[in-house]
Amino acid sequence: MTSSTLELPFIAELARDICSTSGDTATVIAPFTGQPLHALPLSSAHDVADAYARARLAQIGWARAGFAHRRAVLLKAHDLLFARQESLLDTLQTETGKTRGQAFEEVFQSATVTRYNALAARRVLGGERRRSGLPVLVTTRVRYRPKGVAGVITPWNFPLSLAAMDVVPALAAGCGVVQKADNQGALSILALRRAFIDAGVPADLWAVVTGDGAEIGGAVTAGADYVCFTGSTATGLRVGEQAATTLTGASLELGGKNPMIVLDDVDPHRAAAQAAYACFSSLGQLCVSIERIYVQRGVAEQFLQEFVTVTRALMLGSSLDYRADVGSLTSEAQLDRVTEHVADAVGHGATVQAGGRARPDLGPYFFEPTILTGVTPAMLCYAGETFGPVVSVSVVDSEQEAILAANDSDYGLNAAVLSGSARRGLRVAGSLEAGSVNVNEGYRGSFSAVDAPMGGVKRSGLGRRNGPEGLLRFVNPVTISRSTGVLKLPVTGAEFARLVPAMVLLAKTLKTVRRR
Image 1 (tube, rainbow, N blue to C red):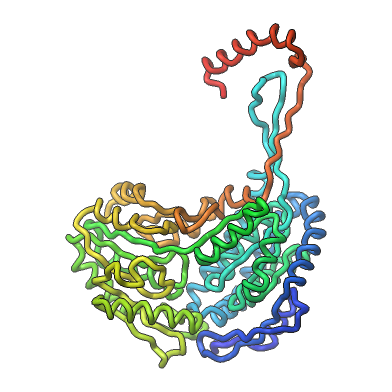
Image 2: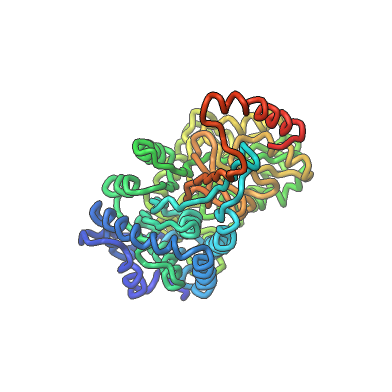
């Protein structure tokens, strides 16, 4: 397929998988053309409740099926994702406006997440012996019980990756899922889900609902045994507050104003190429993309010159192939936000070094990758997340100044350090306040490390996805202890009087031999 829209029969087939009886629809726009892509069926609060009821029934059998069965199903889904790669790429591009290369990153990430959780679940969640406080007298084990049905709320910008990083570990842990998909990303999520259903995941186990957050978002949170939310800090705070009223656990990946430090020992050309991808992949519509660069004075002039050259050379495009370097913004709202931030910065004295303008000749929501200098606290883009192809470049005189500037933010999701010395880069990285830090890369190193936790600090979030931590979100640990009967534990005052000296001696001995 070489056009910039999907075939309508394929859309209608996917849309039938939405849990919806309301009869209402929403028009979804194709970013590349600005024209209606399809009418998306919308769910009601009743549909959400029904989805939870069905998922709870399906979850009982899924949990009892065991690790081996779940592993086999998930590994089959892994293979189906690659077998359906081209249709998934077409769907992602048409629905989000990103390039084919950046869409492939999502397919690859989804498969990697699936493989990891399929293979890691038994090792992480299979249970284990723990040291007893009374060795010989009592044995202790920890087992893990699935929490039930997770409520997953995902945004439009990375529909496959963000769905997979929450849904797949829930399934691997033995949970069901009710997922609220953003309208703009629903088709991609439904295509992902279809692969898992065809691999053997019960259809009721993973339900997808759609609609306005104000209409059904509360119902998704209220019905969940655990909540996963990815989106803005403002909305995430409301989700967290609602979950807290019922003591429901939650992981929240929220906004970011991610910094990059460019040290004075870099190769300016190589650093510029890394910076450009870190800032403008998916046209900046990525929670971990870079929006602030602090470059040391000794290399600042060369770096900025190279960065401008690389950025201006990026090819914008909308074809469903690998020719374009960057794609389109996803919606009119995104275009308005980016336009406002750039106009505000220029109006307050910032200088546009590259880009700075919309490109309606390419499509309704295209905007050139933009580099700004002279950004000050008076400007919207100084501290607020743009979530688009806009980056500010500031010159600093020292590592310490760069570190302080990078950490001077309410956010702490991702950060990056570019250096000619791995040791120096890692040292600076250790001083940055962020959930993930990449050295000589922008975000893909940590984002692709599915065996390592991902999340934010400060107002960038709560909890972690990926790695063992991502699996452990979806289970409750249960401690099971058993008295061995070797010696009767004291229950009366007289028995305590006889055994207290022995118990004190036991504690001191364990300390001496360094036994926990």
